[in-house]
Image (cartoon, rainbow, N blue to C red):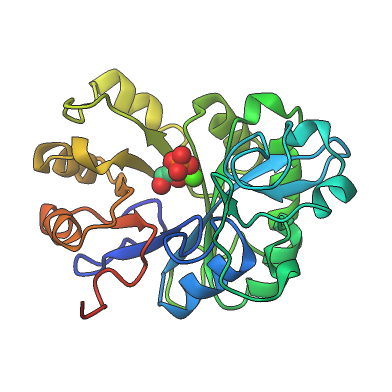
Length: 266
Ligand code: G3P
Ligand code: CA
């Protein structure tokens, strides 16, 4: 079996709501997470950063500029300062659906775990962790507080961590060997996913899976990963045909901004 504890059954194809249902609600906000859950996502993906006063908050970029009305780095703002902002903008255009503006406050990780931990599973991304001294310790201790080290009744981990930053994942692994970790890997345009024996041996020392840009994925890579008990997720897939193709390739799940892409009728 895999180090997922219970392997993903062959016919199970996990849908990870990327930044929530971010095609339909502002990314990385509570309405986006709630909608992903309601659309049946198996996991909700979110990105974390740390404020000046050491709080974990959810946003994709390390700068507030793209998704709020303000600018500047998260690490140069206190939580109170960030809570004044509204994360409902995209390139200057309001995209919020809910009429309650406070719904689009920048969420703290703690708030999302408190509101949603019983109903959903999480894929938490350590984003730009080199910027934030001690963020791994904070995350691990918060996951412990919320009982996220366990598997749920279906045998799936309640939370996994992923990151492009290998060092940061290895640090988490040293802190707690039970947290399932996924290494994000990007390949250049037109490049096919490959992994050398050395890279694979290294990966096996800390991770249970990889997240790979879907364009680079191929059946040979997926089966090599599976032979080594490594789970494969594809990011970010919003097209139904692509999703079906990846499922046929044996990929274990996709990250999508549209968690309903396989169930919707249009
Ligand atoms: O789905 C993988 C993804 O989370 C990594 O890319 O930039 O959306 O965080 P990004
Ligand atoms: Ca992410």
